Length: 63
Picture 1: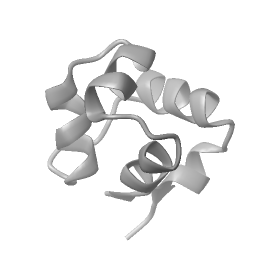
Picture 2 (picture 1 turned 90 degrees about the horizontal axis):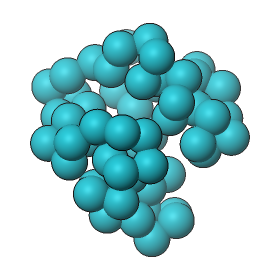
Picture 3 (picture 1 turned 90 degrees about the vertical axis):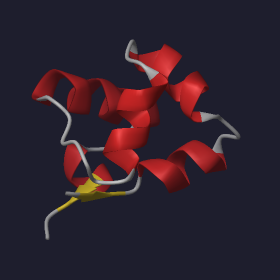
Picture 4 (picture 1 turned 180 degrees about the vertical axis):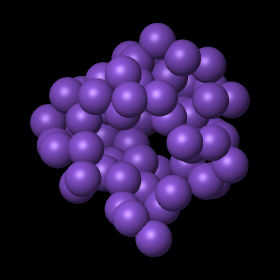
């Protein structure tokens, strides 16, 4: 699933480790989501949306 996490994270000057800490997952999980190898669980998608103050649909783009 395509997403905007890399751009949203970069806009805030965060590393993958920073973002991972904010949402309670590993840096490897963030990397896998950003590269499209892993789709986040619904609870994680909601945590990301809340953190970025966006709707899930504004972060994760249907293909």
